[in-house]
Length: 248
Image 1 (cartoon, rainbow, N blue to C red):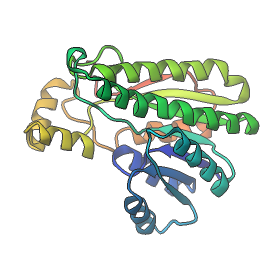
Image 2 (cartoon, rainbow, N blue to C red; image 1 turned 90 degrees about the vertical axis):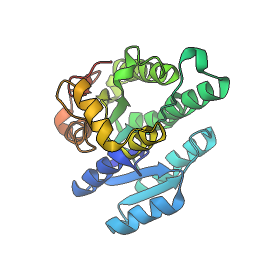
Image 3 (cartoon, rainbow, N blue to C red; image 1 turned 90 degrees about the horizontal axis):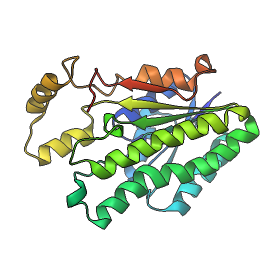
Image 4 (cartoon, rainbow, N blue to C red; image 1 turned 60 degrees about the vertical axis):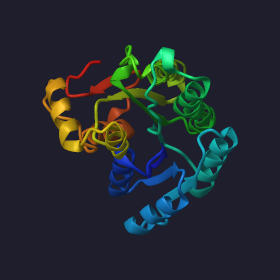
């Protein structure tokens, strides 16, 4: 039985990955800021034995290590790591203050880096592992008001390739999934704060995305499940765009 660890997992695509893993019979470790939210998910899915939730502040390197330690304590191993959690501050270079920069880099880059530090050691011992990075079309250069976010996503791509090249000898794979414009809870909240309704957002996105619509939270799931599975045993160092043809 596989154990899948998710950085995130309470919302959006991360939560759909969690539910898909449960359907496959996998154990899942997931995390978030709200203990009640995590507990509610475990209760609603009636999967206390197969799920572990860790309340976490992704700014805390100690808590990231604790998350890893408790996952190993609960399930004994980690077969796949899905790096989903992240923040998307709206800020151009000239508008970015130090706290915005630090927050983006701490959560989007530093947190996964130090989680990988521990997870890689475990995977090296078991001689198997699949790491799945969640990227963004912003990785190439990004919209002008997503500067710190774009930098973190491009650096994660470098990190994915670094792992694919240097850790393949341990049976560890690493791949980068570029998830396009998606109607997650976070995206809808962000647009609402900008005064854009969901209907208006769908219209705007439909005119920009070549496939004519926003992604929904189910669109990336088949690709992620394939990368978790043994069917992708020789797939590493790949970049997979699930964007509806959208390049920023």
